[in-house]
Amino acid sequence: MKNQYTNQIFWVFGSIWVPKDSRTAFGFTVLMIFLLIFTPFSETKAQTRKYFGHFNSLQSYFNPALTGYEGSVVRGLVRNQWTGFEGAPQTYFMNVEIDPMEIKAGEDAALLGNTAAGLQLIHDTFGPIRQTELLLSYGARVRISKSTNLRLGLAANYTNARLDGNNLTTEQANDPTVNVFLNQFADMRVMDFNAGLAITHQNYYFAYGLQNIARGRLYQGDAFIKERPFVNVLQTGFKQTMSSNFSVLTNIMYRIQDDLPYNLEFNIKLMAMDKFWLGVGHRVNYANSYHFGFLMNNIRFGYAYEIPVSKSYLIPNPTHEFMVSFFLFRKGGVNSEAGTLIW
Image 1 (cartoon, rainbow, N blue to C red):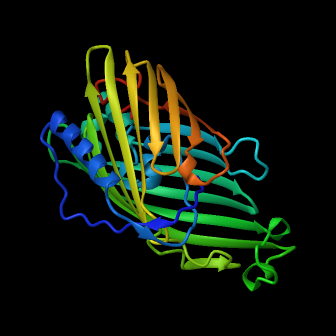
Image 2: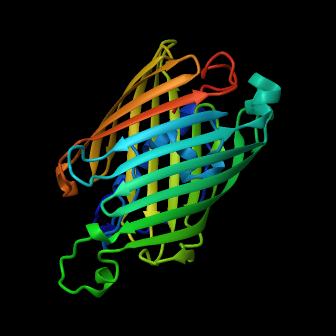
């Protein structure tokens, strides 16, 4: 969730290419991992950023175009970072996504639907700050082939942040930036916007999103956070069926942020009989994670255990993350013919 870095990257995409089949998409995904890992970077100032081990299940938080990609769902997530450390970050996430066509058309919703809406609530505590985000997202999609959709999305983000000055510490005596908030509470309310586009299929997706478009300039209250950084988010995933009982799922997320270095993370899961999965993940220069989960009718449960790597210079305590999803209207479980969208 929160991390400190000393590097920054600037990366430019010349074009977006859509593969014609699953194998080509898999090759493109592998190539993307290679290119991102070996992209050069340079020095910059450290800041903060939200992290989730189950980033692949929170797609619409990073890109509103992916609202409703997995259908109508209610999802909850709890993340306890650096367990056992006083004041360590904690995150509570809940969202509801509704695809109206699932109510009307049932199993044909993935092909016939063209809109979806979502509501997301995220509550963070880290050190002296308590932050609550409320996002309203809307996604529209257009079929560009029998099984492929082009998606566009917008989201409004309202954030309420509260600073407890009683818990502030400073490395510099009489620091004017910190002293103004010492021994008192400060509140800040920010309105911002996200946008994105995506190309989705049952076996792969490519998405590009923008966060904090207004850069936090629409605010009320005490400005203890001077500006929200502009963020570019690229996401991709691929599902490869190995046999009737096993499949491999790969997810990648890459973020470029104005005041931070690049963020690259990915996970790979082995799904058995469309019921259980085991996986591993890596956040470059930050952490390794280990995943398992299961599916039971329309319910999905996932757990991630995360350990910081030595290069991250962070507290070496582990992180626990629990995620539960309930699919509302899909008949035949989450693996119905409407789409096997287990990422």
